[in-house]
Image (cartoon, rainbow, N blue to C red; front, top):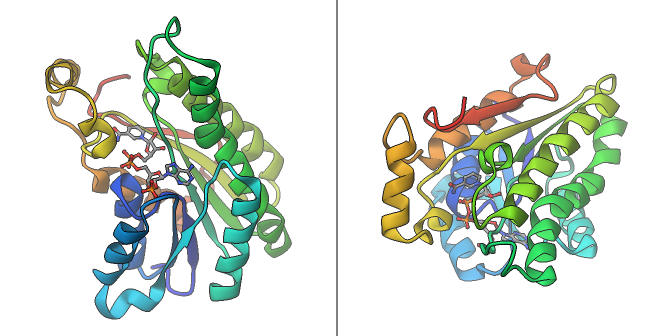
Length: 246
Ligand SMILES: NC(=O)c1ccc[n+]([C@@H]2O[C@H](COP(=O)([O-])OP(=O)(O)OC[C@H]3O[C@@H](n4cnc5c(N)ncnc54)[C@H](OP(=O)(O)O)[C@@H]3O)[C@@H](O)[C@H]2O)c1
């Protein structure tokens, strides 16, 4: 399906990002997967691809550092010669109520989750414009739609991605570039494993399907948005949340 295409997936070596990398490689794409700290895990992750390993590269870089973003894109261009798809997936949480949240807690989350997506997009956008084609998918969250106690910084960053997605979709609408968002609910990754067990049980009770989502369930929607046949979908938000918010 994606033979000859190149995807750059930030945070692409674990959690939802790893599932996206896997899904796109299985669909024939070459994938450059970014990571920030987990070099050992990133190395292990690549090894699992066996003979498809040459279609996967890993790139250390912080999305909240503009120089890292530009360097990573240069590395990907040097390795694969093009970037067809950008998936802005890297994200963090620093959960505290607003009363306890420091300015630094606020900034850290906004810098990675929102400014990171902006900076990575800037780093690839001119290349996509020159080629007259490209797909950008931003990984937001149901929390950007509903808000959540202890997640004002995270909710603001994820709601910000909706506005960023729609504005960029408008700017790119006549340039062959689509820009969309997916908004997962609670997905079984390390990010969710950090939620205390009792609190997580209460969350699951509120999900109409009564279970966490799987990273692959998010990955398959991302893949759908990257397909040639999805060319008329832009500025959209796809919810993947087991009915938690509708
Ligand atoms: N899990 C959920 O329930 C859920 C729900 C809705 C939305 N999301 C969103 O989905 C995305 C992936 O979440 P996840 O659950 O897979 O999280 P995760 O398992 O914690 O993985 C986060 C990924 O982001 C990378 N990352 C963190 N800070 C970075 C930085 N400064 N620069 C570059 N990369 C950085 C990490 O790289 P390292 O491994 O190198 O640290 C890691 O690959 C996030 O944007 C998250 O907000 C998750």
